[in-house]
Amino acid sequence: MSEWEHEPGRDTGTLPEPAPRPPAPEGGPGPAPESGRRAARPAPGGSAAPAPEHSLPRTSAPVVLVTGASSGIGAAVARRMTATGDRRLLLNGRDRKRLAGVAAASGGTALPGDLATAEGCRALARQALEAAGRVDVLVANAGIGYEGPFETMPPSVLDEVIAVNLTSPLRLVHALLPAMVRRGSGHVVLVASVAGAVGVGGESVYSAAKGGLCVFADSLRHEVRTSGVSVSVVLPGVVDTPFFERRGAPYRRRVPRPVPAERVAEAVCRAVERRQREVFVPRWLRIPARLRGGAPALYHRMASRLA
Image 1: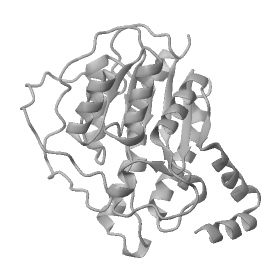
Image 2 (image 1 turned 180 degrees about the vertical axis):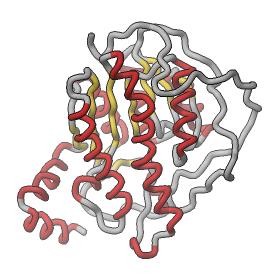
Image 3 (image 1 turned 30 degrees about the horizontal axis):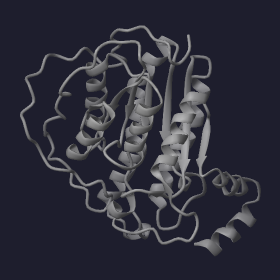
Image 4 (image 1 turned 120 degrees about the vertical axis):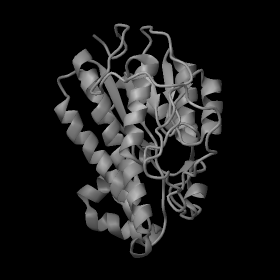
């Protein structure tokens, strides 16, 4: 059975059947910041994200869950997938207003929530299953940044950068992968960064988180190689999105030049359609990544000139 052939119905993955819940109250908090520098955390013991406003009809169209979909790469992925095929989109993000706009434009279902906590990840997985019965493709794209010396990085920001960029994708895969394996089909797309392949000065924790995501993809791919589930990792360079504005520091380097979010979205969709293991955006960024492993001394001399 191919990746896009499925039987309609409900699959609860590793999560128990949820108990009925009362309707969520209207309104709610305004947009939550996505910057690693001033990200506000909800109070301990706060309520989980509300249930989706409506459930999708049970059909055989593949269900795609995209995180970080309120803007940037995630929003571009939603637009691209809507334009190129019959898919049911579940869209997650922290900015409710912008996420609602992306969902309306793409025909997707908005599942707002913060993935910096374990409960936020569990809530998203639960809501996705409630809304569509299963998840066939997970595009783990949510991320936050931080620039500055490691020794002066606030501990709370360090924790959040790791939680959003590394821990939350692992938690979501952990919740959704077992059902994919049982069905014998599915796809996990992890949006990392070239910073995870070569390391970037002033972004040590971000680079470490994205590097961990790359190695996780390699390891997981070995584990599921006979299951029918594919694992892809997409490594963008600099992308022209609000990412740098939200992290509190603009992009200052000469190389690489920023690329449009739509170009990364195209790479994500291509990775799913062709089951590609690894995709660099732009493609030439594969060269420094390979050079670092094959000729590290030469790589470090070149990198120091571009820093």
